[in-house]
Length: 274
Image (tube, rainbow, N blue to C red; front, side, top):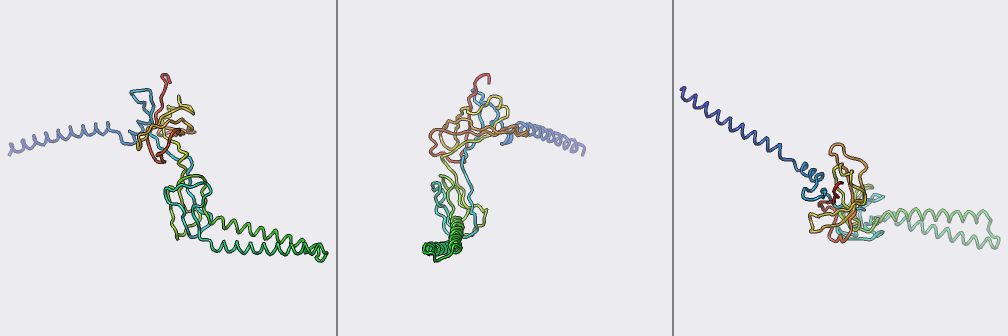
C-alpha cells in the first residue's frame, strides 16, 4: 500500500511539473504575439529598417461620392442605370411614377394659356376703349398667377426625376422598379472614379517632419502598381488613445484599373536627420 502511494505521488509531481512548464511557455508566447490590430499599428508607425522610408497602411477612396435619395415619396418607375454604368452630370438616373404631378402640370399650363388669351383680348379692347382699366389690370394679374402655378407644377414634375450630381459611376442600387421609396431613403450610391485619393493613419510623431505636398508612393495590394502621389491634407486632431493622425493624399499618373476600396502601403522617403 505504501509503495503504491509513493509511486502515485511521484507520477503526480512529474505531471504537475510538465504542466507548469507548458503553462509558462504558453504565457510567454501570448505576451510575445501581438494581435492583428497591434501588428497593423506597428506597421503604421515604424520605419522600414532597411531604408529611410516610413510606411503606413492605406486605402483608396473616391474624392466625390454621394448616396442619392428622392425629394418626394413615390413608386420607382424606372432605374435607367445598372451597377457599374457610367453617366454624365445632369443625366436622369431614376424616374418616379408621377401621373398626378404631370396632370397638374397640364392643367396649370392650360390655365396659363386661358389667362394669356383673356389678357390679350382685353389689351385689344383697351385700344378701342371698350374695357376698363381695372379689368385690364386684373387680367394681367391672372396671367402672373397662372405663370406661378406653372412654375410650381414644373418643380414638382422635376422632382420625379433623379439626376446625376456629377460625372461618375453607379456603385450600388438600393431600390428596384415598382418598389416604393420614402423621402430620405437611400436609392443610389454614386462615385466619381476619376477623382481618387488615398487616406491613412500615421503616428503623431510623423508631424515633426511631414508637410503638405510631401511626395509618396502607393504600393497597391490588388494590382502590381506603384502610384505616385503627394500629401494633400493633415488631420486637425490627434487621437489621444492610438496617438495617430488621419492623413490624405492625392494620386497622379495613370489610374486605369484603380477603384475605390483598394488598399496598399504608402511609403514616404525621409531624408537623414528628419
